[in-house]
Length: 132
Image (cartoon, rainbow, N blue to C red; front, side, top):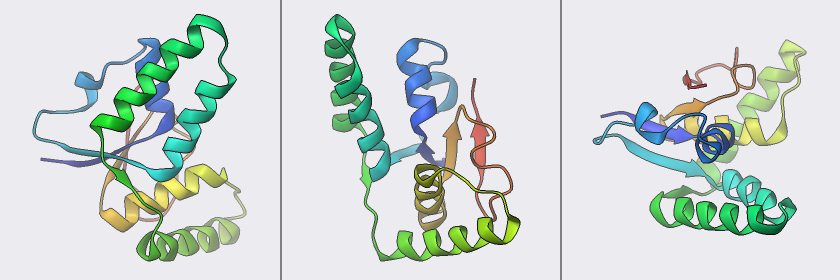
């Protein structure tokens, strides 16, 4: 069993049919998403138009109903601070949401499943699986 944290890019690729959840997740894996991923997915719903908006809304609702959401709590905040300090020392800025996802993964000992190889590269103690 693996502890997995699904990144927004992976979920978007799954929605588009570029990857399938079965390709990345075994039946016995413990899968969750970070709270910030909820916000990113909902922004996608709000920005979509027409039939695409309704289809995306249904997809996001299914994700939110079926996966646990890990809150930004004190443990995640501590890991977030560590990662913020690390990327500043590296001189390699990262996306704010990517760091929140990475901090959530570190705080819960999860591996990030992502389609964005660069987002999490060289972050200390952050494990990733790339699916494209």
